[in-house]
Length: 636
Image (cartoon, rainbow, N blue to C red):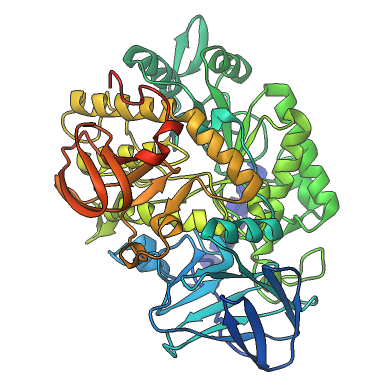
């Protein structure tokens, strides 16, 4: 290539780039956020002994300070974040992350049939990666104690992987040093009480949070007339078909893109080529019984004067080339003012907080406003993001709002409820998307993991964010979501039972299943809300792994495919495509089949049940049956 041609190409590229910038487009430099940095257990070791009964924690060697705060809690402080704790034979370790296992591939992108409630034999990283993004440095031991690390420092847990008889903790303390707490109690709920008293109590969302949700990953730019007003056709279809088919109304979530500008989120200005008449649209949704939630991100995008990116750059509110620096108090107040003004103008009820587990600059050379590096701030960033949106929204709506966050860290539970990221209904295999039932399997474990981590109100993208390819998966996921605190139905592509991506398109059996389980979920709102109030007051989660209630029964110690939904219902889902029966273990107590009250059992017992596609195995715990609403399945 001669010099003249070369420089002509350079000029052309510059002109294209300038034109793109003038037009508000933004070229994003993407960091490698899918892999944590090399986190190792290192530094001077502190050897400990932990004896639950009688309760005692002692330092065998190492430089640390140990203080007994009360009858249940010890506090340890040190300059080193390296602890060594013996593991006993048969001891199980629960918690740490929502993600099944540390690597992203087998736990998400190419999901495998791996993971359980027990983390023993793993190395687990305390470093936020998308999109199964609840990371809380807290575990519960089957010996009857818990351990929580305060703050947001990066770290790693070697849970008997290197040495089967040793749990090694390796954190990278910041300027404040390393602090952790050892917690005991007479029961697992009591341990959760002391833990959430330290970390922060879970927020109590309004009762309407627990009605079924409907959303789409993207509303197409198709406009229709509805009651004399031009509105988005996809939204109108959802609203009218819900009414026609008699489905209960709850929250209508409008995901990105909904705004003008970069990535459909250049600011809080509606894209009226997609959503015309937004104020009338929101008023219509409210009048028809829906609450309205919008997607939000931690971004300041764009170069136009009316876009967040322009203003943030002018004022030094950014870190990197897209993220708001939430460690900057002025940036926080700027973003809060934008949120408040928007909500007062349009009357929206809630926010879905996406991202913040990716893109935020996280290198040692990325220096934030607070003077800390991106490495040290990486896990803090999601907390500040949730806090900012929560504080702003509360100033407009009091307690009557929802913040639902994908990334979750220490303390996030004080500000936000949580959802399970991009649970797969399909994965890329041999160059094409192929359906899987393993995303649903993961959800059954993740709802219990989140309960342990202090997030009692949790849900998943029913059918998978990348959508199901087999109608079995959608039907079974609807059933599981019914017996989760959040029943949010949506994701990429169509999953409307009146226009299915599978055959038949208009699916009478799926319509019946959808109707049945959305209504059961709706009928349980008072039951679920009472449990959410208890979780807010004591940290006792809505969902219990069975070992919470039967700690002395070895059969439930790592039984991940059954759980309690509140104290009254034992749920034993089917997740495998084509499966129509299963064995269910019933612990000690009296049990009754939800669908057939004539079937009664005394536990402990293992029973085999037939489970047609329109049923999920649920047993009523008779000593707690009075808490359930009357007529839970009547007419369904």
